[in-house]
Amino acid sequence: MSEPGGIVLEELPPPALDPEYADLGGVALAAKYGLKQSGKRPPLFEYAAQLWQRRHFITGYATAKNRSLYSNARLGQLWQLLTPVLNVAVYYFVFGILFTQSRGVPKFLLFLVIGVFLFNFLQTSMINGSRSISDQLVLIRALHFPRACLPMSATIIQLQQLGFSMIIVVGVALGLQETPTLRWLLVIPALILFSVFCNGMAMIVARMGSVLTDTAQLLPFISRTWMYLCGVMYSIASVTDRAGIPHWVKLALYYDPPALFITVVRNCMISMPSRASYATAADYQAAVNSLHQPAFAWAFLVFWALLAGVGGFVYFWKAEEQYGRG
Image 1 (cartoon, helix red, strand yellow):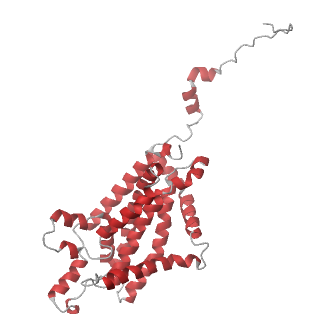
Image 2: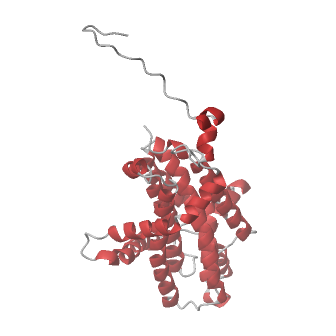
């Protein structure tokens, strides 16, 4: 072959095909040397194993982020105690004094702080979890890691703050002359199950929030409505004992997941009142009913924890390849 000007160019033969590639093909050759498609969703159990390998990163990331929340505040980490205290003060003034929901409820302040702190754990885990993917797109696109680390760290942050809140719960209980008993130890497994439930809910809304970024704006309204339905500031018995309430409504109120977790923890820490403390039998019965724990409560705690925890994990894992795209 010649070009104008008399320069002769030789046609080079095509490069020889690698014999191993020609024999195995691209997919088999990549598998032979352990190469995998970048960003491909791993099998479920392998994905769980990757999360376990990164457990120190998850807790370290959550701890660092938790400490940074109040880094610019003059009182610093003291706000981790002040925030729940101020929340309880507001709720106690509104529901305990103005609306007199404390009537018929023994040790209403302790009753209230348990409900407020536990539901706040669920609420903030869901709200922060819904933003955990959309707020970290730069990190997701730059590094390869299981994306479930992000909603899990959001839940761990709230769990750490719940730990401070439980210190206040114990202080209130002792201040109201509650005697520590072995039943108090049951709070630990109840909170572990509740943490699994909250983590599962955070993963569900994290996937939703990665697609619909308005999820974080809608959740405060949804969670606030949920809070008013699950007996955080009042006794569920004060509603279910009314005439004309359908039986299915009573079951829905008592076995609603956060209501059930709150009720179990209350029963662990608040002792049943004595008959001598009340002037009438009706007042005494109302106090007992306010601490009513439905049948098979612990079995349902396990059920809700597994349903939300495992279901939320699988639901999040199924969209692993989609996070950070678009």
